[in-house]
Amino acid sequence: MDLVRFIQVFIVQGVIGLFYLYLYYKILKREKHILNFFLGMFYLFPGIGVIINIIYANLTDEIIVLVLHFITYYLFSFTLIFLLLFVLIMLKSEEIITRRIQLLIIIIFGILLLGLALIPNGIVINPSTNWKPDWSWSFFFYAISVCSIFAIIPTIYFAFKIFNSFKRKDLKRRWIGFLVGIFAYYFVWTGTSYSNALADPAFRTLWSLLSLPTIFSLYFIYYGTIKQF
Image 1 (cartoon, rainbow, N blue to C red):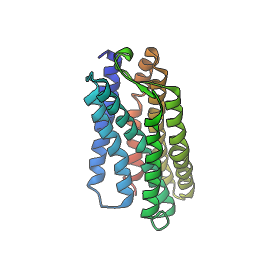
Image 2: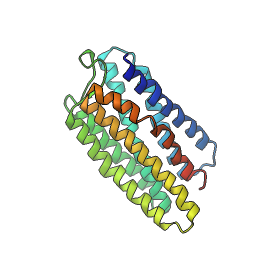
Image 3: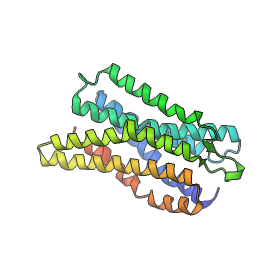
């Protein structure tokens, strides 16, 4: 494993994964509430994804590595829907966004993401790529389109509506922290996706360095919500 891959997997993603699991544990200890549940799921799924990523990082069976890489990316993408449900319920209440609607949103998004598995040669990861993921551009654009249209853009829209609904300055200030946190996650998710599609060694190195500061920004999601609500 080269230095860049080591930094990406064991330092950047490893620290993020441990941090996510730690915050999930802290949320888990709080009262059982649907908002806590969805925020906890947002931290749990990437945490599991990082563990899977570390497991297959040193494997050399092409099929196993391919499947585990897909599962890892699926988890990192699927967790976006929990942020959307979190802000939807905050804005509209659980009486409007009922359990049936929540489940329907989760299922539809999950099925759309599974469409990634149907893209021919969407992911190549074998000795020819030095065991680094090399995505097709069709795989990249499908992932970006589905996640942006059905999760990222709606989440940003509703998050800003919540911000504008606050009258107290302290609530607005803390919610800005939440916005910083979600944009940090979108930055990491999009940049990592682009890096895998570009498959350029120089950009992978640059991206490893650029994504490091976002580790600390991800705490703001927790700070801007659980610490006050």
